[in-house]
Length: 198
Image 1 (cartoon, rainbow, N blue to C red):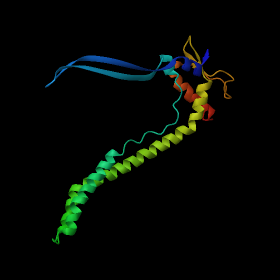
Image 2: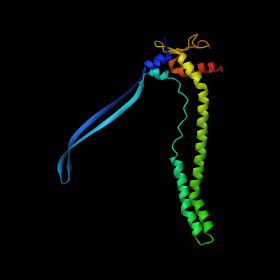
Image 3: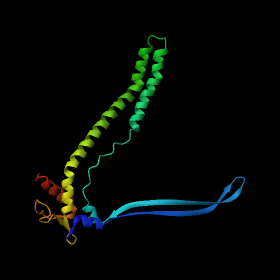
């Protein structure tokens, strides 16, 4: 029997490295003839690897706000709507035609209206997505300490591949043994007991 944090650490590794390659050859240049050529390339690699057991008993992810994405799409739509306004509004103020204002408004509605509508819909959708992300972050921040505590107190049997919380490791008593492929269920149940929900 070994604690889950120690097993996870021993079966997870990170790596990084750099490799450089060189090449040489000849090329033909107009007016010069054959000339020698040389080149080099450098490749940087990094990452992490883990065993199947380590993947099963990975720690619970910490709270993290989801990226909101780029505002480029919204900026482009607003710029297109503004462009139609710039094109049509001068005509409204410089034309002597008494129907110029009406014509300009109709043209702007027909040509620029969809862009304005799309910009408004994008703003509303981004606002809803941001609110959902913040609510999920707040909810996970509340329960994360209990998940981290449960994970740290859990032990795994390397021979029979079961995980459990031993008696005395937490003030809630021992837990039943779970097979490692159901490890997240064990952590969720233990965390719920720590929060007094079970």
